[in-house]
Length: 286
Image 1 (cartoon, helix red, strand yellow):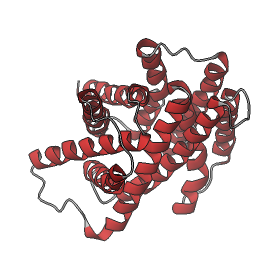
Image 2 (spheres, helix red, strand yellow):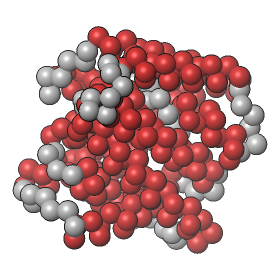
Image 3 (tube, one colour):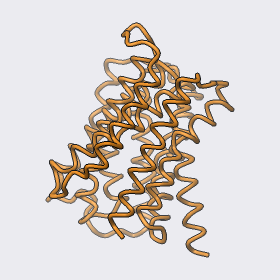
């Protein structure tokens, strides 16, 4: 029964991850402000959660404070480029091009860890990259899909860096503490932009940012972490590949966005590559 509940929690978390892309279209404001609102409300929510849990250890572990500051900066860049990709192109293009992040992880992780590069993963990573190229109708900076893919791929690169550093820190700190710190420092990095970027402070914008920060960030990460207590990380990684699928379905239902045939074909190649990379990871761990 606990396994089934945990499975539902992880699926709901990934569902919320996929829904986050919608806010790039619903909020007609700078992606910097979208991310600032997201990390601010996420930080506040996670702080409340940590307070309720009765945590007595310091929230800002001194021995890794520089790592947390770096994470905050990378998280800011990651989400800004992610929402920029969606605003320029479509939710589908942004999510699918971002989903090619295993390409970068395959080559970057051995540089930070003692793990060797798996030859099969090199092939599968190039397979994912081929899927991304299929999405692009024309290699021209004036083409919105092309520029959207470039921003999305860059978002995937920064996400790869995040996962590698998070993996290192997860050996010493709880996932919620890591999430709190990276959102907190991301907020500090982005707050000064309020003096340079103006945006309409409407009740609609504040409500959307609140939902994005609480539901699609703090709640989703909490559910994902909680679900992994009874579900293997390998299984969770496979479920996580559904994020762009959920996002595309949401975009179709709420934004009336219909992906082109090229986007669907490229997306299927990217997702197949992701699933195969996750599957080979599971096989190695057995």
